[in-house]
Length: 306
Length: 222
Image (cartoon, rainbow over all chains, first blue to last red):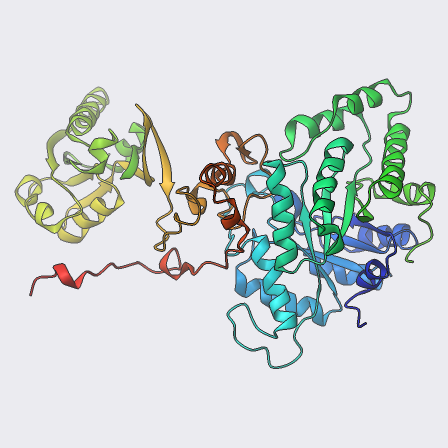
């Protein structure tokens, strides 16, 4: 088997994978990225590099990916459909491949209303579903999005996508996941799981349809620093669900940060041991990357990469 | 129809501040129906401008007229007599009408309205955008609900992960078009149609960067 990336190899050989997330800086220095690399490189199999998440201008995910690769971690380049048309996307994808990027995660992207340029124009020339299968078309059929032949050196990415079990309509989320797999997605990272019961129901439907046999699902987890953060996510972020009991637990904790890490560790252990069909975790420690090593160590997933 | 809204009075006043005699030209088409540029609105705007200018010690003379349609050369032609001796013209038509006047006459033409979208009336005083005018209708695939314009990301294989409780991530007041599509398709027993991957859209019939032209040879004369 010719693996497209190390993450591909890890997942296809049946190992439980650990990915994390690095948000590029709002400036032109890679210093912070390198710092995060040093911190995470023995604790993850790969890291996502966000693509101007929440529509806030940051260093390019591909450029940051190059730094991260130099820093010793395999990057997963995020690409949203918000900012580029199909011409720019293909150009960037080929450039990214030439720079050693091997994993791409396809997303719609947050609406620009949430960012620091709310007056900007969104593109959405193609959507995330279409991006997935066009990436596959480039790789497997050696064709540009237009159908024109790529004569040589076509980019061969390991294709990732996202799924959100906490968005509506619930049942259709499983259909849409299957649609993404049909389109060519090989690994899936889920939205942050706080409502474990709902995630378990989602996975039940996934298993009933055998989707977990066709794609590697990585469960998204996020350690929370405070009950206020939990409450904000519960009420202020579309497509996320936080049970009241979690807010209460953080509220009553003597050391909320420590409790947040405890909860995250418990969740990972639970997912790994009890939820069939999950092949890894994706740890999104937003602006709290330094806590990832502890979480990985306490869940018995250290050292990395496997 | 085209939905338009009147600009703030102050903004319109600034556009004509240097002129003494101004024609206010309404349109009996869409903007009459959406209560922004018909005969009534034209008279009210002209009156408001006269009062404002009088109070400012800079009296304004006005002429008013409402064209059958400002987007039709035949009716624009008929305006010649109305505007021949004015210093400027305020058009209460959509952007199309303003341009038709500017193309035909050497007068200074300014817009009184902001042209918003193609839509319909929801309740008295509420209009909603329903058509993205993309030039290649796909409503047969989406149960009669347009994702091009009603989904804030124009997603063709939705819904995105920001859809919750039937609402769009951009605003809790905005319906998620894909939730509506899902429900409608479910009701019609056509959910399986949504499992087809809708390919990238050919936007060349839409906002691809040039003015669009629609030609019907069968109704052309000569």
